[in-house]
Length: 116
Image (cartoon, rainbow, N blue to C red; front, side, top):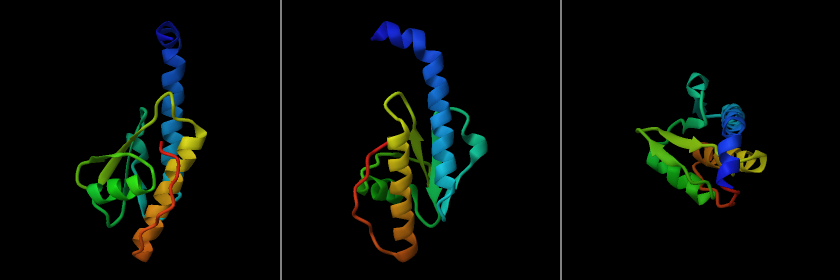
C-alpha cells in the first residue's frame, strides 16, 4: 500500500486539487456561502456563510455530519484527500445548503449527510 501511494502521489494530488475546485464551485452556488476561488489552488477550501462566525459554522456543519476546522474568525477549512470523492463532495455541499438555509430562516436543520 505504501509503495502504491509513492508511485501514485502525483496523480492523486492532482485529483485532490480538482476535487477541491469542484467543492468550491459547488459551495459558491449556495446563497450566503462565500469562497475565494483565487485561494483554491491546492486541496484546501476556505468557506464561510454570511452572518456566522467560524465556530458556529463548524458546529452547525458538525450537526449535519460534516467535520471542518474553524479558520480565523469567519471561515472554516475543508480538505480533500484520497478518501474524498464525488459522494462526499455532494454531502459537504448539501450540509452547507442545510446550514445556509437555516441561517436565512433562523431554524436549525437536523438532517445528517455524509461527511467530507
